[in-house]
Image (tube, rainbow, N blue to C red; front, side):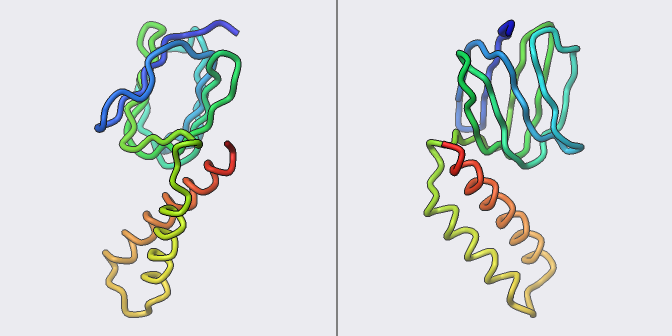
Length: 134
């Protein structure tokens, strides 16, 4: 496969800057795959698993929120949160899942608390799922 320039930058800093052969991320309307020669575009990101082929090896990550930009063959991923599978703290994700489920099980939780707990639960499940792909 022909490689392309990929840069992954989060609010915490640069995660990756190098060549990749393929990138698949979850957008707000479904998965999008990028390979060399992709048309220019800007896409809002949803919550889900990301997969990048770097040096012929598939690497998985939890990728949550942000945007993807493809401009003149350069791909920039700017997620709110991005964690490679081998860097995910599974214990922390499991605790977050438990806390979210406790809020959701509590019948008198406020609507705002329920929405926040649903998002927390979804992030925790994504992280756990991706961590299993190490």
